[in-house]
Length: 162
Image 1 (spheres, rainbow, N blue to C red):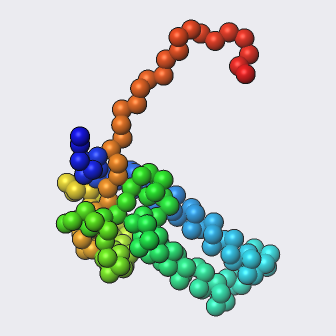
Image 2 (image 1 turned 90 degrees about the vertical axis):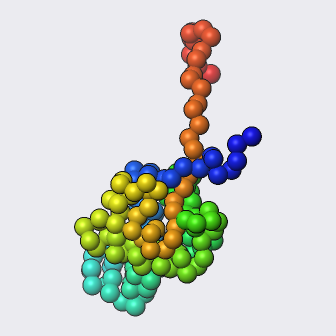
Image 3 (image 1 turned 30 degrees about the vertical axis):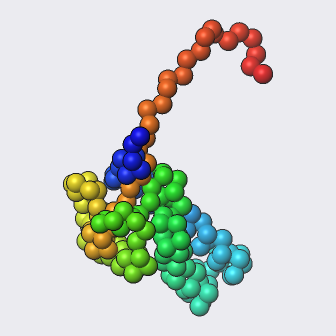
């Protein structure tokens, strides 16, 4: 029987890109909904309504808090969960520490700021690590995709489907 580790592969650039896009969409929808809840319809009419203390907390403090909470509790954000990926310690394969996750989060900003180079590094790295993974000592893994059986039918269907 194969070991649990042999069922894992490094999550590549496109998997992680899709996960990040899903996470970004979810966070932006949540921010929008909360800002509408707090400020009401004036938020849509007056962009300056956004700059109240609640707007700052919702827009700037909530996203890192949500991301770090998911990482610490689950080892993944909803986007990573959707692709079956998780963040693990690069040496042990275990759950990273909260300190590693905090380092990873702030290093991800550096990965973005320098022309996204820290993210594109995933394409060229043997372990598919971004710069923020390297700084934090983490790696993103996912379950190996199994080869699914092809669909086949014994006989063509006739008549309406029920």
